[in-house]
View 1 (tube, rainbow, N blue to C red):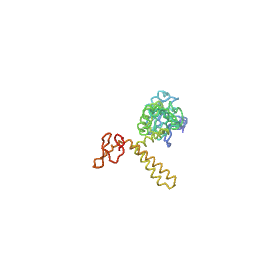
View 2: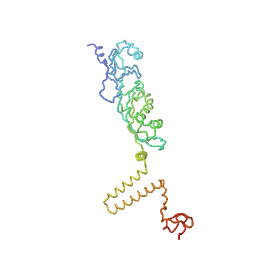
View 3: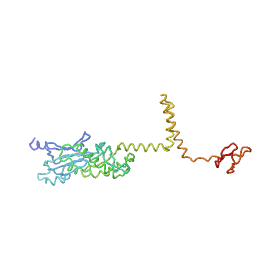
View 4: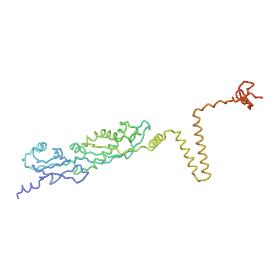
Length: 327
């Protein structure tokens, strides 16, 4: 074997990357000092993009497919290298494989409450959490803005930034949505879609795409939840007066079933007095029917008042009309 054949045997002739992990975003291919032979085979699989970098500058980008590296497939690299030594000469370049698939089920949450101004409750503090998915949409921008020259880059390098961006924008998202605090739970889907559209431009500058965004829960302050419970209870009760009467009747029944002697009897009397007052108040609000006039027409049972002449019972000692004393 000649010296030239021995040297060329050390050059890269097959360039590819298979990923067995679930979180690797970028892998830098490195072998034999990155000396690549002209005519080498480059295989880019689905959900991958290969970026070739020459002397710190992006030269060529390869989408999924199989390539024989030549001047036709590498126009930028050809221009940079000039190929003064012939088309079979080796060249040195860095090849980065970028994973373009979606990274699913990434979790986000508010470590501290976010503020929301509500028309009914004023300023309230909310906690929220959910999931999102993202992918690399612009490999060149992602290389320049995020991972740089890292030999291996995982989702851990960007998820914390994404979470902080989501949480920091959540206050503005809630304010712009104009959804009342009491209606947030019924509008998770609409709010998630609104947040997705609002947050996407912030990731585009990094070469990333926010593919999906979902709100799983928004926790309201305890006082707001208590107000919601009271409002729900009032809606279930309906007629408050009838409900109060029902409660009083239930108290009497429970007191009657109480076997604690005098204590139970006292509770029963108290409940009876309460329901009596309620019933009296209820009857006071009802229009009273006029009492029927007395009929004294029976013969022998009436006489006439000497003062006003009104027919009155014979047994009466005072006139019910004028109050005169009868003899």
